[in-house]
Length: 112
Image (cartoon, rainbow, N blue to C red; front, top):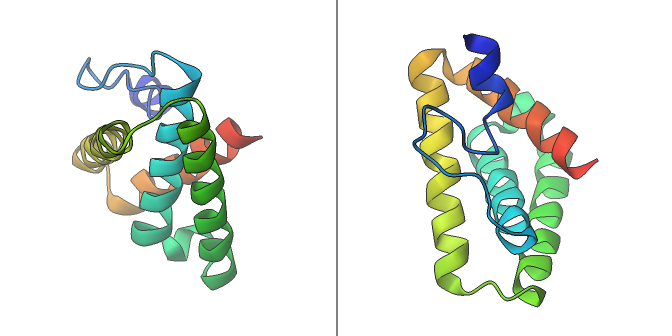
């Protein structure tokens, strides 16, 4: 069960609470939101100061990509809310440290 939650973190399959991204634009917005959340909530688990700087850069690049693909401020705000909801659900079923480990791993995997 825990493995299923982990696999669905960024794609939003957490008990159907967050729908998967419907387009490359939404996927880029989600990656940006996940990088932002990781930088702000999981700095110690992400590798510290330099890693947070890289996460911010990654978030900015993904926001630029999402905007080139047609994302609006509302799209970015929804992505942030979706990622926050998924993160909070993960915390509810585990611990903040485990949730941070999941988001760091999933984000790294998603961005290649």
